[in-house]
Image (cartoon, rainbow, N blue to C red; front, top):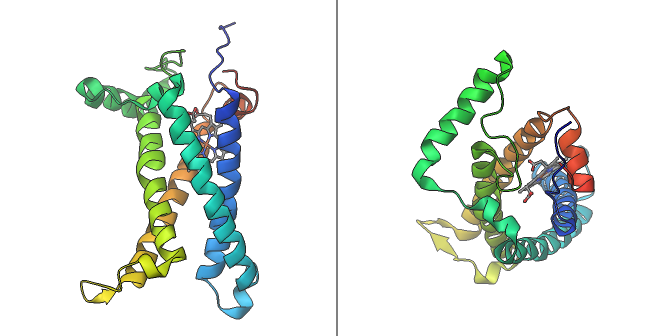
Length: 202
Ligand code: HEM
């Protein structure tokens, strides 16, 4: 039997599951507001707005907690991409997922205490957590406080453009999330990664 490694400290797990719950509520209420024809609502419009705004504000604090804790703990090192050999490593991982895995080849980057994420995982987490989430937060703040948003940009309404951008980011993060869920099932067993995110041990 392989050695067990403690990979997900309690703060990562609390941050992660709160983030997942908020994300789910934000997607459901966001969709509900988007398709707001009266008879096709998931929730009444005003309930969606209140829940969406509240979850968005909690998400901001949860994100700041994540960014701060990652900055000052070992966990942040897993998000540092070493660009020098990154191209080759990414290619090895893509080759594994598209070919090697079906031939039962060993994982090119087995999980160790030093390397928690494979190169594809690492890239997707960096894009989601350090690009898409900050942008969706900034555009969300622009929608929550329209008085600080530009009135007109390139001859179009600033609020409309901000809204469009916010929705684009919402759809992008939803796609990330679905791919994330799928890849989480490719562990030692289909549920082992989920158990790790619950008890902390890989
Ligand atoms: C029902 C929703 C979700 C489930 C079941 C889930 C599941 C998991 C699992 C099992 C892991 C551990 C495996 C790994 O390290 O890859 C993980 C890690 C992670 N997930 Fe999720 N996830 C969900 C939603 C999300 C969302 C919405 C985001 C971001 C927008 C996210 C971002 C992350 C990140 C950044 C990690 C790595 C955390 C770290 O160890 O530093 N997850 N997730």
